[in-house]
Length: 83
Image (cartoon, rainbow, N blue to C red; front, side):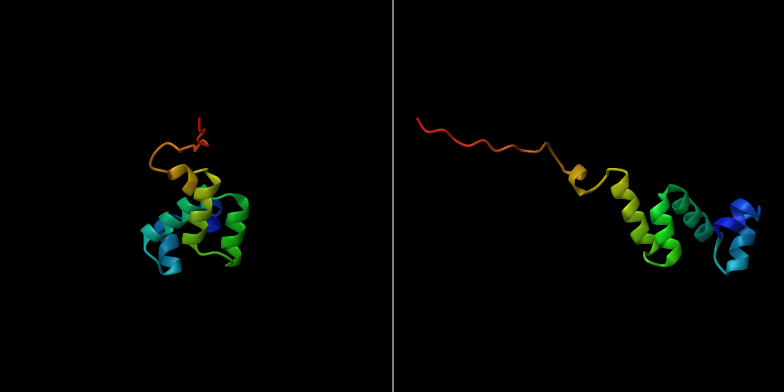
C-alpha cells in the first residue's frame, strides 16, 4: 500500500478501491507507517506485530512510556534517622 501511494503515485482513493478498503483506512495506515521506526515497520510488514502493536511500540520509542506518564512528581523515600 505504501508503495502504491508513495512510489507509484496512486491516489489514496484509488489505492483504497484497489485494496477493497475505505480511504480513511488507507490514510491511517500510511500515517502509522510514516511514524514508525525501521524495525517496527519491518515487524509489521512480516506480520510479527499488528498495527495496534506497532503503534504501541512507537510510543515507547518516543519516550512516552508508562514511566513518563505518571500523574505527579516521583516521590523519593529517605530513611528516617532516630535521635
